Image 1 (tube, rainbow, N blue to C red):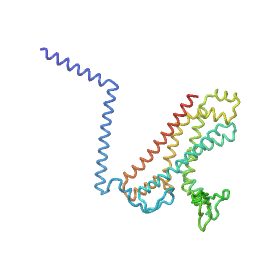
Image 2 (cartoon, helix red, strand yellow):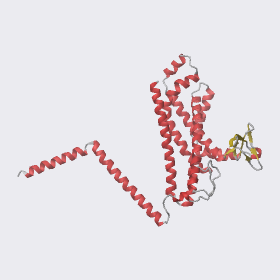
Image 3 (cartoon, rainbow, N blue to C red):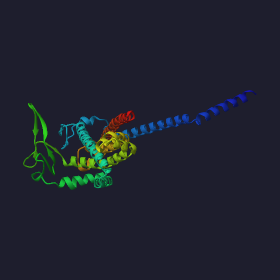
Image 4 (cartoon, helix red, strand yellow):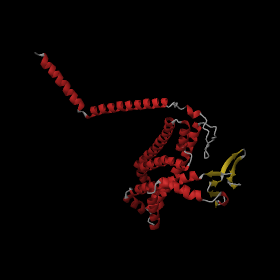
Amino acid sequence: MTDAPMSNDRSASLTSKFKDFWFHETYRGYVFQAALVVALLWIAVSIVSNVSENLSQQRIASGFGFLDTTSGFVISQRLVEYSETSSYGRALYVGFVNTMAVAVIGIVLTTILGFAIGIARLSSNWLLSRLATAYIEVLRNVPLLLQIFFLYFGVLRTLPFPQQAYSLGGMVFLDNRGLHFPTLIFEAGGLALSMPALGRFNFEGGATLSPEFLALLLALTLYTAAFVAEIVRAGIQSVPRGQVEAARALGLRPAKLLRFVVLPQALRVIIPPLTSQYLNLTKNSSLAVFIAYPELVSISGITLNQTGQAIEVLSIAMIVYLTLSLLTSLAMNLYYARTDTGGMRA
């Protein structure tokens, strides 16, 4: 007779504990997260198994051994050594370096131009302010790919041939083959200046920026700078009006007021969205594939078509862009922390 009540009490206790556990928000969250992890692992294993089976049926070898195979194709624009006998790994490295060249130079030029236009947008000069506003509204609302096409096909490719190249100061020349300019070369006795000189068909000596590189760089810079300008404008306007008026009362000139009072405080508002624009510029460089500039995505496409290693090639490209984005975010976050700490100390 006593066993039944004890059994009921035990069951009621277990039910109560289960209810306490289930209705506890933290514990219930752990259960759902564990179930989600198990489901994702199951999906991942299923995908890998399915892909492996399909590759086996199509007799496509998996792995990264193809990176050591001879590529056999030409890359006309490169900043590092490469030839047709180089490997696919070397070809992808050339594409990576070309991407980095556009991204780094583009970020520097975008920062300078974006800050200049953002400050001009707030200028008391009516004409300067309106010109800055017009620039921002036009460039932000025209698709980037169209701007690349316009600069490449509508501007740079319509320039004259090298024999009628435009001379910029007598040392720099612009034609439909690109921008030719002097460079320093290392010799046994020191440095020497290599000047571009017109040969039979093209300029020889110096260095040349191809129309593809120029079109991509200009389009990325002009387009992204329009967004950066609005970010800068918003950051400047976030600075309390009283501090600006106090600085003026102390006799600070506009340039010093902007440098020592406004921008140090505005940067705490500017840097987070500015980081996003830097990331967008780097990723948008992949649009170069439409004008045959050999950056990472373009070289990846050629490699994929020749080797059939779609998963491996695309994985490499995605990992590279992910790494670049994470490193850029890390650098900007460290700078932001330093700026924010400096502002708090001030």
